Length: 119
Image (cartoon, rainbow, N blue to C red; front, side, top):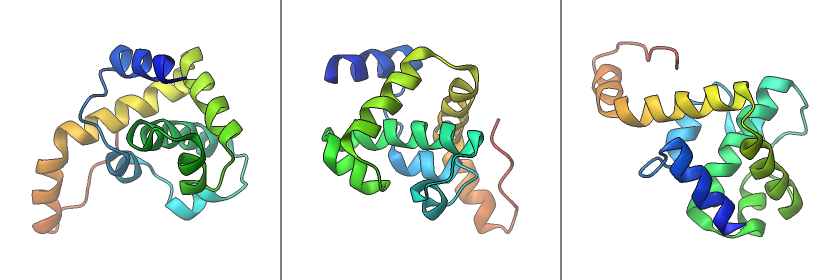
């Protein structure tokens, strides 16, 4: 599993991108991500958040607890991302965009400008 994760990180150029970047770029709240909802877009975002959480914790059980899932759900999410589905890749790009632009976004928030929608 660790090898597959490293391949995904390299393929998508995710070094330096954190779970918090993912949560900030995600249009859903942590409570919604932890819910049992099966709305397609929310599920895709959940997969992406699980990837970033697992990247930081490197423990299937702890990652699952973070998002109210089992270790097998974490494995499934990483496999889904590995398939390269278009929607999931778009979400990963949104998280990377957020990570790249977060300093500007923090400045914009402090001057009362609303955060732009993720790409």
